Length: 454
Image (tube, rainbow, N blue to C red; front, side):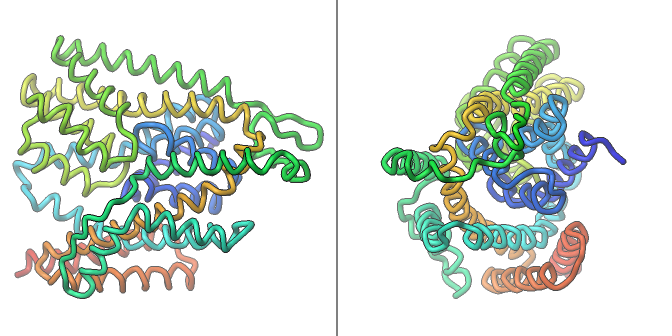
């Protein structure tokens, strides 16, 4: 039987391969893999990881991977898992960038057409997770109200765009809406205020968290499980050391320009709250406006390829920019080194912040405020996931329409594919991987036949 470390790394490799949609879209995939399927994390502990990942900068999937790896496989798991979950998409992205001159748009279309089917499965997982959030909440009515309120606050334009596609209209409302970071910060403030106002008497009779969920403060049967605060700080130090090595590697192959480039990678990721879409604009500000990456390359190749491949978009864009900067100025060997260093920098920055916050969170996991947070933050995330599902559905319809069918027809076809996938998941005991492969091959085959068979 494989060791806990190898089992966890295998799970992270799987999630990094099937994790289309990035960021928040991967939360239910992580929960399904770690909490429900493998049952190696308690729900409350996974909620804690999700909260930490949402309030710190950088790539959310790599933070979820590292935090769960720390719990399940110690320091080695905390360090390695953060990288493993980013590798599949990063390698695909760099490969497509390197081969773009030979494959042109055809190579990107292959992945985009397959991603339409895979996205249908991801939407099923998202919706199933939201339903379970409401269904298992202590107060279902309150949870449902929070989910709907957050969805309307974060995704009114997404809802209008998708509705327009379904009825054959191109609607762009431009309504004001909250970003993911704004809504999370607002929710945290409301939850903390509610917890302080209701007083300690309400919680005095509440049960303490289970051993798996309460970290260093829970006591079960008189035993106190080992806190992860110290290992989290050790992992922080290791990531910081790796970041220093990334700076050194960049300087070795590109001199001072390489050092400056890597510093900008670190700063841009540290400034990114709200996931990959936020990084697209931030990355442009750091690298396009400074002339390090041309606007045509950035928007014409790197962003589309990053969007078409699985895993955290932030890490993929950082590594791809490292590759392009290296190829255009120093050659292929330097490009490979700079891409690897950019990936190390991205994973390192993300997890340094996450591990530091987690170390404090772990210490006070049983504090009344944090226990209220664990109850009410899930519906907030559920509302954000509805917006993510709407965005993924719109994107899938637009990608499929590249093959030639009307975008409205593709929107309805995607809805039908989601419905069929939902029925298959509920009706049959089929491994997720087979459903994902089947859906991806189906849409690649149909859309590819329309484009290349014409």
